[in-house]
Structure formats: structure tokens, C-alpha cells
Length: 203
Image (tube, rainbow, N blue to C red):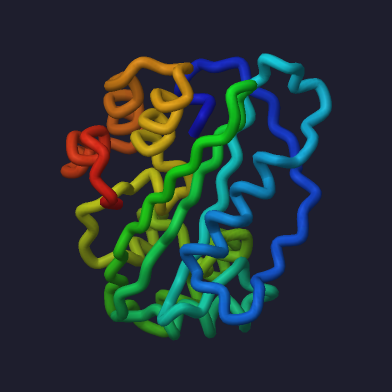
């Protein structure tokens, strides 16, 4: 998704412990993990480098659903989510020479009442096996979500408007550049862009 912005980027893994602390709220957890990633040493970044770190989690009743271990685990996750409302949280941390700025996008997601056969066919495709919560909102064959009026990009893993407003805080971007790029690629008319860019805590 960052490639949509035509930036020169370099991906790097952050070597941090992503274990959840005892009784740690999901929001605190995802913010802490993204911060830890941003604070990690990045080879070749240089003093003027801009480090963008993010972490996305699927949360059902404060239980974090990570990537499924196998097909059976994916089936169990999709069953738990079926017909229910959950949250997808994406936290961003941006490190520049001036320090670190953070933001978070919390998106409520209502799943549709899909059938067992639909779940099995979707799992057989392999698509959910590397996805948190065992689903991709953008998968048109399975189409797991009933209705959605929030940040589609965040559920995919990178809320570009939240990223933009955080970059603006860091003094490295001008406002109102990313929304059109995001919506053009996703074929999605986002109803919350203006509110996000105005600083609302909305996803």
C-alpha cells in the first residue's frame, strides 16, 4: 500500500517481543508494539531516515485474533466472527530525527452470516492463512463483511489518511495528498476522510 504513494521505500523486520502483557488492553498493546517497532535499530536508515512502523490486530471481546495456525484454527476464528461485530486496530509510529509520533485507527467491522461451506471454500483458497482474524476484507469471492463505512485501508493494514496526518505532525508531508490515491486503488469512496484529516478519533 505504501508503494501506491510512489515513494522509495525499504522494508525491514523489527526484532521485538510482541507478546501481550498480562491484562493489557488491546489498544495499549497495539500502540506499544508499533512503538517498539519504530524504536528498533534499522540498518541503513541514516540520521535523516523516516521510519514508519505499524501493527494491526483483530479484536473480538478484547481477545486478539492473530494469524491462524492452520485450517482448523482459521475455521474456528471465522466461526467466532460470523455475524458478529468486532474491531480492527491499526497503530502507526513514525520515527524521524525529531522524535516519534503515534496514531491509531480503530475500525468497527460487522461480519455477515456466511455459511460453513463458504468458510471451507475460502480456507481452501489459502487466503486466510496469513491474515489476522483469518480473513481479508478485500476478498471479493468470500466477501466476509456485511456493511462497512469506515477506513477500508486500515482493515487491510495501513490507514493512509491516519498515516498522512501523522506525517504532517512530523513535518514531512503536506495534508490532503493520500486520500485520492487510496480511494482510487481501493475503488472505495471513503466516508470519513475529511473527519480523519480534521483530527477526529475515528476509523
